[in-house]
Image (spheres, one colour):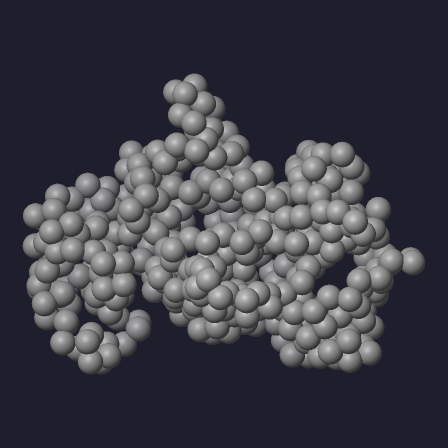
Length: 400
């Protein structure tokens, strides 16, 4: 039982940037590699490594051999698995519109795909594990995303402002959001062209001259077509969703929580992301990957959403836990100045990541000095001390 240095696992997806994560972690990116995500957790597809004096061991293996490190509370609720996954993301290109299943939906979907003989690494596989995936994020820069359906009245107003979408407004007047969304997602190329090509043509010059505001859905349609190289002959139904979903702008330090079924898409920026330990993603467009429309329409939550922004950690709070309804995880922000001490206790297994500055973490005779981008795994039921070496802050993921 104690504290261990933890080495994360990079994910080099093509939507990632090339500078932010290497700079955060002190990595020389001389090969010009894409760094989209940095994972710190025990997901079977990309477990972090625990560093001992003479070797490294996957965190999954350590927890399998020593499940008591997770603690009793975690074992009762989540068995012998670390219940959360901590990530850093650099969103240089928009991610797919996506949503995540409930726990029950994931259990059923996983079993059904197993029974159909769909391999876990099959591109058409939707359910990679049995878990749900509620998630929260804290912005590390100006961050733009789609989050849930706008109020129906706001969607109607948005559609009516654009001549080529007026017919859609008339249809939505007569339909539920659920039926309307199903119609959009099953639209033909000729329908998509009828709705979108006039908007693209009308706004192209303003977009090229950088005269469109970022809260204008027309901007994001043209930006996505541009950066994802979407042709006029192969338009994506997800483009219409810029007129249906909330476009949310988070300032650095602000955040948002995304529950099961809520459609969302990260558009631009960098963030810390904390989620239930799952890789179950049901996609709803803006991706070359498999889009399972029947499953999407079965899982999507079409409720009207007023985005609830998680406020920035107050400067006056040296230790601040972001409020969310999640039961699988909580994220705490800990600020420190040089020589400042914080006495801490881990009620469950925790992962600490240094975001800036440098800290010394001590527990009995063990001490780790961690700089920006370095992390530690802290086993359950441990008293430990955080001492600032250089001014900065860290985040700690654990159970609520």
